[in-house]
Image (cartoon, rainbow, N blue to C red; front, side, top):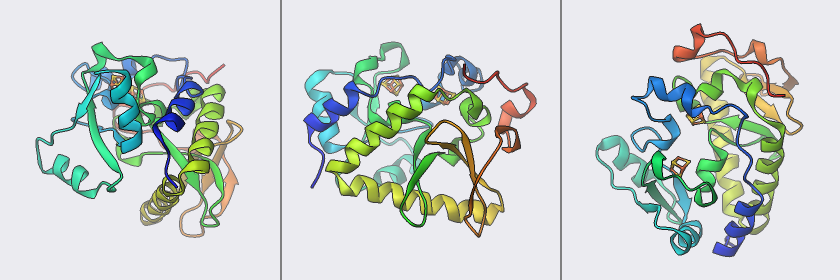
Length: 228
Ligand code: SF4
Ligand code: SF4
């Protein structure tokens, strides 16, 4: 069973909340030659399901196939599941909120599953720790975003088991990476609170946001006030 274009249309309609009340693009763009990191294919190439791409192409000319420019780009395309496509939009000045991909809407998070395959929260794409401002300011993540994020993925998982499997595998990869680092995995819990996954034991416990590391250029900035 796989998600169809109409499933994505339904999910898009109910997943519109921004990740934060802050315009976070203004926070990371100064460190990325003026462009928000997640809206630049030099940093983040959206991977979409082919059904999702079909829906997007029927609604807009915002998106085109991503053409790799270097070995990192070619690896992204080579590693992709056969049911997916790597895409690129026309650029941040042409963004159409209603025609953002799931990758745009969910960034910088993915659904985190425990070893027991239980969905317990939102984990982040750790490769972006040094570039995405949100990852050093998890307190700004909005509860409406968390609620819509979880509902959107639950709806997708209900019609596409591969989607769930991909996230289960990505969660396991994150456990391996953070165990090697000997650091807890920071999670935004389903209720908007914070959790940590201990390295090696993978025990899940409540956490305070101020125990999570801050990264890159954001380490030296004062933390942003929490979401209201
Ligand atoms: S989600 Fe992260 S990378 Fe994207 S605009 Fe916000 S701070 Fe920048
Ligand atoms: S569609 Fe909008 S949010 Fe998505 S990558 Fe393009 S500019 Fe960024």
